[in-house]
Length: 197
Image (cartoon, rainbow, N blue to C red; front, side, top):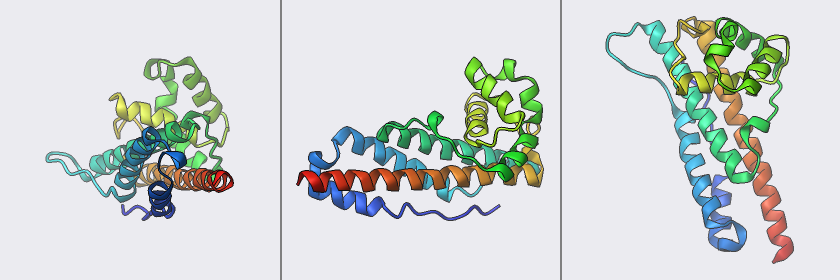
């Protein structure tokens, strides 16, 4: 499945502002974090497929969707750390996507105690399964599953075309949220820097 193409349109503007303003505009440690964010963002935005011998097309479709989601979530984590707005505080309502993701998480949510160590995440997953439309919650749960090895395309509904598409859409939504938050942060940073200058 071909994902949407993204470009962080404000990135060049950020680079120019950093060259002109130096440490006064953006501290070096923050710039390093944002560079790592941008690298991970680009990977997620351009991620196409996983290739492995001995796996069915369906399994690879599921792993592709899961690994792309991991990259997108990682980008969101890095951005959140850099701008002081951790990804777990984000609220990304999307009722249609939430409905599709409930099908993906139906089986894993029945064993939430075994899959997720944090009681807070288990509670949020239950709230999501009960109707909450914040798709950041399943993004966090699926990121944990992919990163810690409990994600398998057969254990979630990602083997199906609809399941894999839901995970791809979730990655797209995370990338769009990164674009929005980065743009808002940069706009505010430039406005404050102009006032000081």
